[in-house]
Image (cartoon, rainbow, N blue to C red):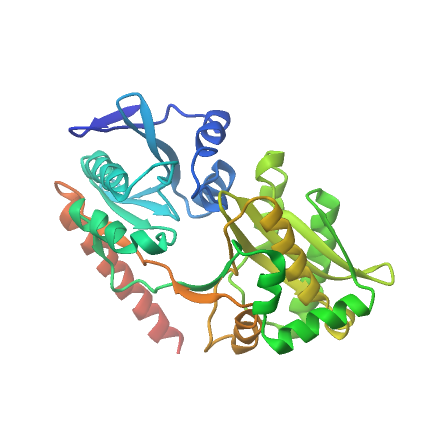
Length: 356
């Protein structure tokens, strides 16, 4: 069903935008990202039994915002949650936090009127506008969800020249990069299915040896890679030593931020420091494509100190994402959603105790 909700200045249209139109509209937004592509949003909605909507927010005839919205309703009632991850997109040329406020206000009313609590986990706010962006959420009726964890990452500034970026690397990190170059490691970057299969083999080998939990489904990314159009596909970089793949790196290059998603290395790759060269080639590629920053894909100093140490040597700065903001549903959904979540938490806790 096509629904439109109006505020004093904006209109939200959901259900009218196909994948091709979405890509054309998203190209105008600097905060365009993998998580706000149609393929990513559709696949993840399907995995959790939700419905994905593509919302287009207009002020008059002008598109000022876009959002992939994952909707999960409670059984037998209209109430539920409308969830937006790393959106909405709003940073067009000349946009201000006032535009963000208008987008948020329109989204709150549009989905709130349908009995849905609106939850938004936005991307990072521009440094000089961070306070104004937080104010925009507050003015639009959103409050932080203190019960949700705050994601952390490291951002590498790509605006200086490459020589300056390389000088910012920690000495030990730069030594690793120099060793990789001296040992004749080469890197090729591709987007085809064969490259993804080579990466998956490296990743599976590493996982089998280390048995760590990444929370990432490589199979899901491989599935999405076959569906993304060429301009949205992941960049798969493979490090070769003596003609053999020894390490791999997967990144997304949309909008003004390059995002590191996956990495893998075997014993030979670790011996020749291949991961250092892979990261450096990604920096070179992202900068040449016009990216302003490189998001190193999250850090967890406690659970994964080795990866944190590696990423900390790349000359970036630690950055907390803003967290999750929520605006309550209107009508019965205002009571039903919190009650349903409380019941769900109690059920999970009971199952956990029973399993002890």
